[in-house]
Length: 353
Image (cartoon, rainbow, N blue to C red; front, side, top):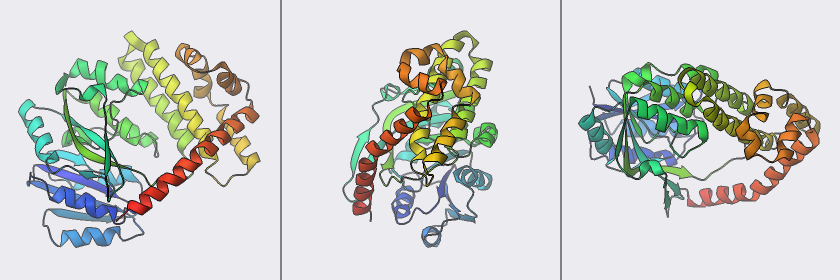
């Protein structure tokens, strides 16, 4: 039985997977198993996994049909033989001291979740890295039960820069196994956030350290339409509201302000997302009309924080179902982002090994 399981969900990672796997195998800490979950890739990802499996007995390869990262991670947890689990995304990589550092920090303080900082990494041949300068990583700190609730979880209600990713964290396996109820209501957007939200609510001790040990690869953006974006956005709002109603009655209005602002901000992303589709103008307008009839979206229009935060023209456009205004807003965002997206794709392809 290994001390730690490192789970990598994989879907069409291609040659980027090599750097990910090598960074894990080259760890200073050796007592771990590496679970590579191929989630129905149609490229050479499975061949790469099998190549490394032949060279290292710590590697377990799972080949399954494509069901998304939620199910891929779940399968990895089921196979895990360790008491602690870490996730690494297939196109990212980690510092050689990451496992040793997080495990040592967890053992020293009887921690349920240990969190390290991460770099955003641009390119591959010549890596440009940018550290997350969030206030949460200014020092090493242990958060006890009530502090977790008041200082970390609320960050998820207000868009504060406390990382919602499942990566760059070490979890007690039992915490992962006893959580995940919210994931049944999420298809894609926010799966990490709502898994973490539930686990942080259950955790007794969380440790945040100031070391940056995870490299999150930025680049290779696609202009892909996300059909579940609006429903995930609304379901996420509902989940957060349920948590607030149960655990944050003393600061209910403040937390409502946060999730209402986030919902209305994400709605702008939904408008932009429509222009990544193959829909014609009438189809986009019909979807906007359906969106603006949503009860949760309408509810957020009357939130005190939203009224102070957003221009009145934006709120009125939703309230009055001004489809023309919202259509043009989405179109303008699409046109503005398109050159940047194209540039990032070019940079990613040029730098890719």
